[in-house]
Image (cartoon, rainbow over all chains, first blue to last red):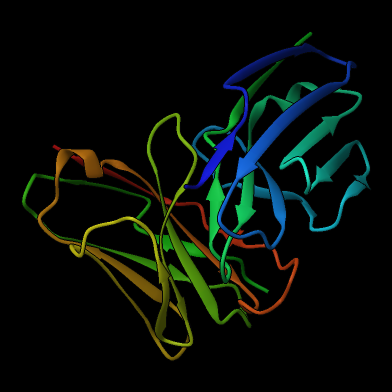
Length: 109
Length: 115
């Protein structure tokens, strides 16, 4: 079956670092995406990994281990505006994305 | 370059009715995917269209149907609405289903409420 697991909620303090984990079991794998979604808004693209390793993009980094079916999103120097849901999604066959339920991150001052 | 747009923004229907949701893809994108997002959940894949043909379908009943037009805009039709169909419906376009790493650009969504 298709299964993507990520924590439901996380909290962190402004200026801190937070790591959001994602584990997946899917019938196919053509890359893993992280999206940010603010309440009531559309998901916006953060990162893409298809090979093992770390991809860095400013304050955000994403890591992938295909052998372990594992990824994480690392957010550094947290800001209040980073309070949002973070969605882990695996691209299965074709261009179909399978999403986890999302991790709701709350950043406190 | 315009982004993905969807209409209407919000919609209220009653059980048994039919609804049509519309999506305009980002310029140059020939692939569109539709997702249903229930409150507190991640988006669930409904189906995808590539150059006017259905190219994959998720675990949704046949009363969910779609169309893609020559200009790559798209419609999602839902017949015989049920209460559980209440959700945010997201349309996402991408450059090509064959391109690795191509992100899907999401529209703002249509919030459907079924009473």
